[in-house]
Image (spheres, helix red, strand yellow):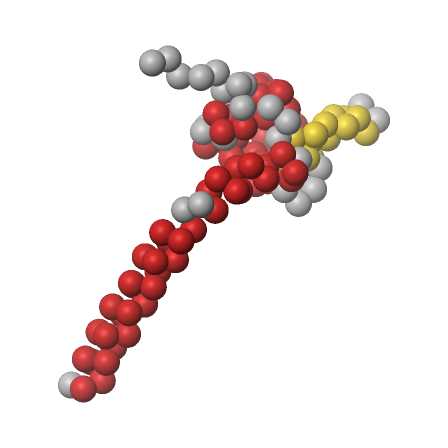
Length: 113
């Protein structure tokens, strides 16, 4: 089965690790392409292409500030991603609980020695 285009939805867009890095970097404030490229160690044309994909699926907003285009994460559009990953939270909570129990049991054994 052919893979869906990265521009088809937010899930496909964030499958690319660089796009997730860009979203994280843009989460706190709007930034221009050049700053994103410099901070993440990427080439400007590559960042522009990733931003285009993120913009096409609605995960980033862009606004003009003079001659610069500023990009920022669109938090409401990320909500479906969050809700989907949240379905797995109980699995991780269960795993963390198991680790805690094992660590405490090991600690109790060491205290008895």
